[in-house]
Image 1 (cartoon, helix red, strand yellow):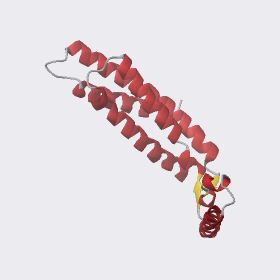
Image 2 (cartoon, rainbow, N blue to C red; image 1 turned 135 degrees about the vertical axis):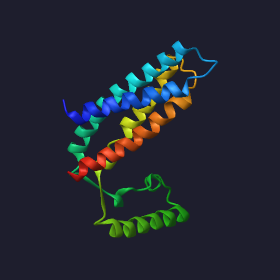
Image 3 (cartoon, rainbow, N blue to C red; image 1 turned 90 degrees about the vertical axis):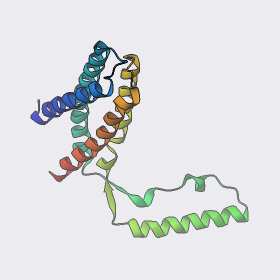
Length: 165
């Protein structure tokens, strides 16, 4: 296993264990609940970071040489129109705008890997909320917000570091 994968998992465990412990410690919350919440969040985050990093490396390596032209982001409205003069004029306006943007964006391409982290971020966000709901985490959103935010940040920073290689 790659040392970067292991290190990212360990750092994630330590950070999220500490954060969850702090977020759920207080006079009204029993220490056992605070420790359980910190362990659940830390272990979950460490495991997910290992898995997330592994998958992200595979997806970025697969799609880093593919490009998406911005010219083909087209409104679907043009597909469903009636033959009235107003709708024909609107369709012609859209077509002119699309042709103009196509010529502008012809050589401007975005790597397909830019979209690679979107689904894993959504899946991780859903899972971290579900795990903490099941665990009955006292301060749910304070506990999971950094996980969601830093996962997205980590995904894109790590993706760009892979693309530079």
